[in-house]
Image (cartoon, rainbow, N blue to C red; front, side):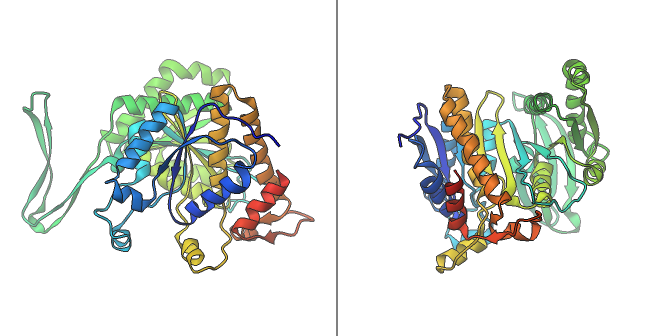
Length: 402
């Protein structure tokens, strides 16, 4: 069989632990037999990031800007324990945070729905799509430990370096502590808002946006003002014509509304809120392994990734030679998303159609009862008895269906 040809490479960002193992198997079993795969490869495994002083992450992000489409494996964001385990030079920042800072834009995460996989929230009948701002907040924060008796200030200077104002953050006279400074910029917030409004219109989905502006009366309130002003100025009439709505409310109010809803809307979140809530929504729909994720930058670059971690516990079992049953669906959909978008941008219909077929084969394999262990307790479909497959067997079952 002749393979589907590619004209422009994808940027391929390899990752860590069990997802790195799955990455290779997905390519070997599901993609390379059918596609003459062209990628520009970057190894974002933790050891290589440490070896290159994390320059490899920046290079991968710049390549994404050059070629327009990237696919990324899950990666480790090291904590103190990981620094010791991998003998790292330092506690490197999140590679996702670095890439998102360079690309800016918005992360859209949507559940991958299958017949028979029942959400933990029984009222959810339609997908809830999470839109996560991909710039600033704690992911680009400045932090420090403060000694007893020291004071921390927020100091603002003009472009000549002259101090404009100074505000006391806290007087640590009563004992040592910690301090953190976060920032955002109007340009990025407006790009985020515009991306969300456009996505809602394209998908004909109503939309929530929420912060905690009653507490954060400058920072969060500014997000609220930019969203509301842009909506009134450019999007209100379009939303009304499409018979969809936009609502701003407090983040705790939206959480309550989401749980009571039947789904079917876009939920726009600030960076940290989106990080947390996307995992909550993904798990409530069934599994973190059943969530697609794409970063869309304002200048039209796309980075597709799995919306979960590196599955460390399964990786340690794999290293011992034990069999694992690891859900690879989100990683498969990262590849299909990137291949489809590459096909769309290059006018390569055959490549895009292959991505559609691979997604259909993946979903139908599960709906026919063949799945990894995490989905077994959730699967309820009349006349279908679920069968637990190990990590590689699941991919082979998809290949057979494909």
